Length: 174
Image 1 (cartoon, rainbow, N blue to C red):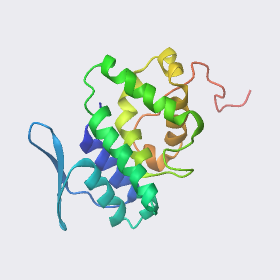
Image 2: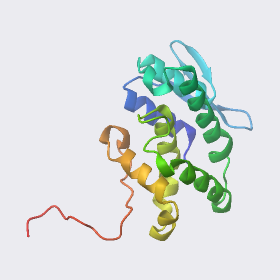
Image 3: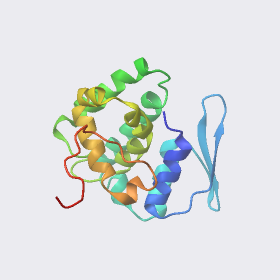
């Protein structure tokens, strides 16, 4: 699984805000960010603070129901995805995400949210390591991930994950 600090730094870079040093507190490896405006503890608290600092409130939901969905998925990432230590642990989590995305483009309504960013950075190494066959088992998750990675400002320096064995276009003239 991706390090929470990597996800936090990726989100900060996407939002164009400075991110303080991220360390970990205790055996639970709870991320702690120290900055000029104080100390923030916990992945959800930190990434929502970064969105507010960027004045991008749409990413964390504008209504109470949207904010509840954001909180739910950020907690899911922290309590389920981040605690996976083996491929066997990861399989039901990937299946949950795949099932949720069956009729959705993004996790929150029809717009990019902090959930999409957090899960993109949290899943990048995992999806990059899956075989093409395994990616096909999670076709909705793969579709969502491929959509998110098309935005260079999100992908940044992360390697593009391939989802097709066959290159459809080489970029050169025939």
